[in-house]
Length: 491
Image 1 (tube, rainbow, N blue to C red):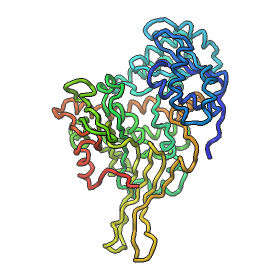
Image 2 (image 1 turned 30 degrees about the vertical axis):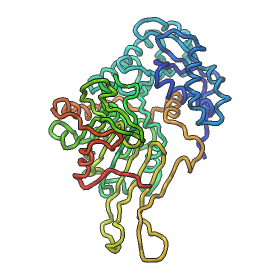
Image 3 (image 1 turned 60 degrees about the vertical axis):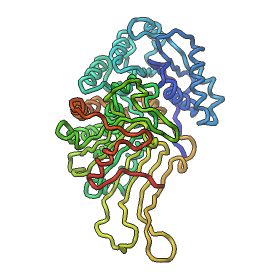
Image 4 (image 1 turned 135 degrees about the vertical axis):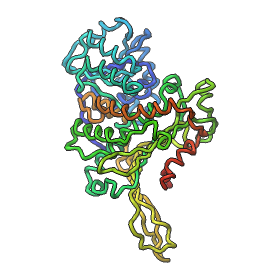
């Protein structure tokens, strides 16, 4: 059974960077599927904005080609393609001059409609776009602006961007998007914790041994070489995605499901993180960079080969040990890892409970393994609770670790909406719950910056690892020094 669909009133969505990879690969397919499901209705307009000159029809052809790659996801979609494309328009705009702005303002003159400006451009352009929207009367009360990560490259730049946006828009109009928060299993974490009496009484240091959060990719640089080499895995993944997941695991129960109630609790977690700085970075963090190897059975080049350079200290892998310094989590380590060109594409949260205090079972029986709650974000969204269970049959009491498995695809059936589909509709309806507030972003940078600073002054280069592995051996040592090991799903 899937959730019922409520159609949205017609709105305008304007994408700066409408010809870019994010727009064609993620945003427009997401909007198309919302149209197929009846959530986007006739009268809605979608504008793609970019610098080059082209007609509506030429742009629609590009969008059509991009969408045809997604048609297999939904058997109802082929007949909906052409009607959807009639909602799509292209406008030439120059972010560094007044070219195109007056015409855009004239087309968006109806201030009674919700207007969503999606800034799928570099963060250095956010402030300029905001100022021009204000100058042309496009920052009214029904305007919302969506900004992609990374929001800056450190705390100072994030503050500058937030200040620039804040001069034009109220905080309630700014939607800082993190697509991980739109994933079904991420939101289900809130339901698991606060909608069931089973977990929340156990959700503390007394019963939980440690938490692991992994976001692994098999891809390399793809078309992001210039951006990625200036960013690295710490800025690209840890500062936003992994810290947001950590917050949802560790936060206190909010007073309600209101956006600010949840974001208040996430902020408390960020501020409670034990600092990692020059004195502890070498013990609590590992950074790596992939070398040539094989991923999913095919040979792939190393990072420097893809980059086309002889040297770079940019990390493509990060593992670190974090601690939330409060009563609930004191002494419970949070192990985070993320990387490119790893053995498997997957993202998951693993909550490992403490061992039973005393085993009454014969020593010859398989050792009692601790219970684990595994929340899989991708590729197969679902939840597993690993338990010890008796093996059926005669021959004595034999135990085996087995999962209670909740697969979203099998349980709920049908096509599951992608994260961007949910998040875009939340922007239109004005629900900021799954978006980051300014103080969250700045608190995350405040924790990340000392790690980056310590790495920059260190003479130690990122540790090499072979593409297709699980990262450098130092990442294994990081967790095994504590008598633990990284989770590997055996079933």
